[in-house]
Length: 331
Image 1: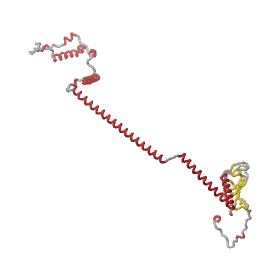
Image 2: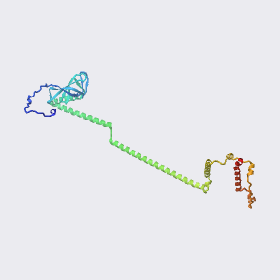
Image 3: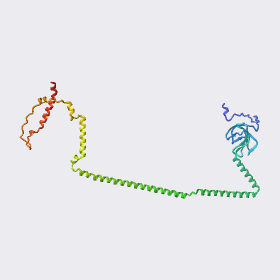
Image 4: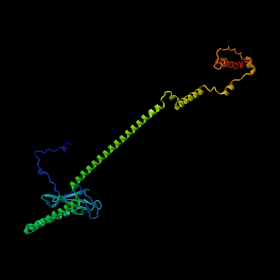
């Protein structure tokens, strides 16, 4: 197995290559090759389009009695993909291309036809100039006239484009600079106007503040003149109102916490009065008050006026009578 991969094989010393029999193969032998269509073509039998690059299993053979500078020319046989008709084309080494033989027509070869026509005219002209010198002169004058016409046409086209365009770069630059200048001036004017407005606003605000300060300074001495005495504040309407409000609030809080004692109805429900006989029986006899030597300016003695002690003793006696009412009833 390793011998089939070597490059050189063993030849014995008595090897004679002339003794090897040669195979007699035909010169137009065909080989099966895989290729792609070299150009767009259309089948003549069914009209099927075969596009460039489509792959085929083709047969290749060498064209007999046709050489180009010693290079052989090969012919290829393919079949149409629709009707299986045979199509043949061969190599064209002169033009580095392929040439269609039969079975189909080549498409999109207008450019190639034009090139071939130009090439044919060029060869005919060269043959004419080779044998006729006057023809050479005529062709040269014709070529110079053609060149002049082409140059004139180009110049006319350039002038037409310039007339239609009418672009002056200098004027464009000047306009752009003028526009920039106007923009800068406008921005400067706007900045000046804004600063002026801000200064005016600040000045107006300052004047208003100074006016308010003057009014306050004028109102303070008037108030001081109205309340020259310290006690006038207490007697003013505001002080009285505030004092009355605070007193009222204190009374309301006291009544909520302790209750009201000024109501006669509530006391009447709680206390019962004794009869008049019991009050006369239990009431103590008041001690006689000694006469005082001092008298009022009117001549009335001081004993005529009830003193605080007398009123207090009478109120206490009344309270004692009321307190003994329960005990007497129980007896």
